[in-house]
Image (cartoon, rainbow, N blue to C red; front, top):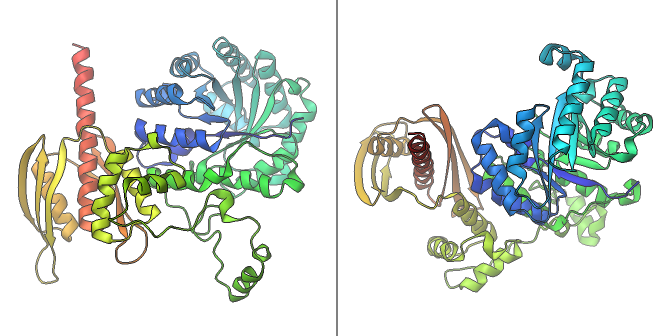
Length: 515
C-alpha cells in the first residue's frame, strides 16, 4: 500500500454550499489556482447539472488548471454524468464523481427503492462515467449509517463496474473515530476487489470528529481524504485540509504517511478563502487561527524564549506564516509592492500590478504605513471587481448626531453620467447613504446580510464591509474596503449593484438569443 495520501479538496463544491451568496466564476477560479499552487491532487469544483452558473465555473476552472485533477459531482443519473463530462472535457485531467445514497433511511425514505435497485443504479452510473474517463469515483452517501454488508456489496459492484476510487462518507458526521476506522478496515478486508481502487473518506464535523475520523481512516487503509480549506461546509463543516495535512506531517512518526501539499501555502490560501467567502476564521482554529501560534501565559512565554520547542510543535513558517514587514510607505516603488506580493505567494499574473499600485498609493497617502495584509486586502477586492462597472461612487459625505436625523450626500456616475442626491433620516449615516444610492438607481433591493470586519490594527485599520442583497429573488454579494466605515458600506452596495447590472445584461443577451 502506498504511503502517500491523496488530498481531494472540495472547497469549491461542498464548501461553497455553506455560503450565503455564491462566488463568482472569477472568485472560484482564483481559489482554484491557489489550490493548484497548494498542491492538492484533486479539486472538486462544482455540480454542473445544478445550474448554468455552476456548469460555467466548472468549465472555466477545467480549462485553466494544469497541475491537479479537476472533478465534478453527479448523481447516479445519466443527465448529471453527461453534464459533468461536458463541463470537464476541456481539462488536461479530470474525474467524474458519482454518488447514490446507501443507508436504509435514505434508500427507503428518499429514493423509495430497494437496495438491489440502488446497487443497479450505482453500477449503471459508474459504467456511463467510464465511457467518458478512466478516472471515476463512486460514493455511497450516508455510509456512516449503512450496514457494513451493504457497504461492501455496493463498493464491490462499483469497482467491478470500473470505479477507481470508492468513497465511504460520514455524510452527517454521525460516527466516532474507532467506529469509523472499523468500517474502513472492514471495507479493506472484506471487499475482494478492493485492491483495484483507492479508498476515500469524506467526513462532516457535526460532532467535531471530522479530522479525527479522517486520520483514523488513514490508519485503517484509506488513501484519499476529502476536505476543505478552513473546514468550511454545510452545517458544522467538513474535514479541515490544513488540520489533516499538518497532523500527518507533524506526526509522521506515528502516521507513516505524507502528502504532496506545499504546506507553506496553507496560511495564504486559508486567508484567501476566508476573505472571498466572507467566512471569518475563529481565533482558536487549529493551524490557521490568529491565536494558533500565540503564547500569552507567562510560563509559556518564558519557555518559548528559552526553547521554542517547549510549547510549539510546529513553526509558523511551516504554514507560510511570516512576520509582517513594516516598510511600505507612499515612497515605496512598484518593485517593492511586487516583492511583497511575491513574498505572500502571489504570481504576477494573479493580479493587476498597475491597478494594485495605484490603490496602494492612495491608501499609503491616507495611512502612511501599509502592511502586507493591507496589500492582500486590496488585491482581493480588485479580484472581485468586474471589468465593466456601470456604477461608480464619485463623492460622499455623511453626518449624524444624537439630536438630529442622519444626513448624507451622494454623487454617483452611472454610465459616465453624474447623479447626485441628499438623503435625510434612517438609522444612522450608513442607512442614509444607502437610501440615497437606492433612490438614485431606482432598484428594489432588500438587505439580507451586513458584516463589518477590521483589516489590521489601530485607528487606521481598513474596514471591510461584506453585504448580501436580494433583488428579484436572487442574492448578490458586495464588498467594500476603506478606512472609513460609511465609505466601505457605500462601496459594498455599489459593488452589489454592479453585479445586478451584469446579471441584467446576461439576461438580456440570453433573451436576445432566444428571439
